[in-house]
Image (cartoon, rainbow, N blue to C red; front, side, top):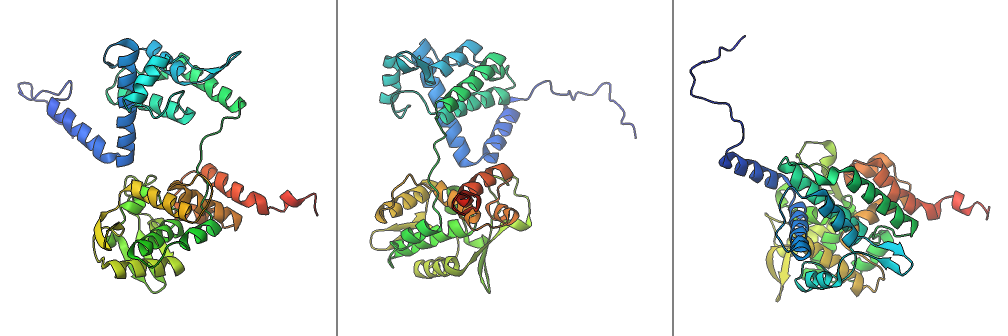
Length: 353
């Protein structure tokens, strides 16, 4: 059916969005991003702003020119010279950024951090529909060659150690019967046994998504990094059985939690506080590892990598492992699985057979 065109209509098709519509779009974009992602974006943009002010004596304006992006890269990436590894960031600016709390320490950025900073600037241009300097061939080629140079030097991504089953047992052993100890035991087993949950997923876990079943519990993960649209999938229901179910039951009963967030702060005098933050999950892992005298670089992600690594060691089916973790990339899971299975592989003992 043809729709007649009203020649004298006062309604005009918009050539560009109004300020109100722009704000609405921005608010939807912000709401659709995870809090951790938004925090990392803001941090990266603050850094770009501070660096530009120190480097050029003026505030950063979009679109950023390609030479500026190239300067940012060589300022923050090390290159090999006869004098050793050097970068182009003037020492005075480096000190100023650190003193202002914008930069964590003196020296070049980690490669992953540098790539993330470029990606955030690229996203800022994309959202504003501006010419993107990060897509320039010179920028892409430079980043590619830096990555290869770092790899040739043996610079590997900084990955946290995996909290495998035996190590998890060690830190569970230092969780006593205080309210805090019961919480930490329940939290660690909840995160590990349900497929290696991310710290944000643990901190945001709510009672309304927890269901008691004869074997223990199931927890429905309605939102995750790999399911940001909240699609209903069978694998959204994560089982919590055995020791994990027992620890969770004990924590909920001791804390008297019947609704709201599952994991809360425990204050002095065994008083229950508000919900834990994602950063608190990381702190609990680090604290319990230190208490158990476990050496290594452990953080909240150690739970996730530990679960996948342990699944590889025990030769668990890949499909079942991915259903539990929610990974969409087979390559990512295989990386952990192969690392875990390599020490028990028959091929590793070929010479001794």
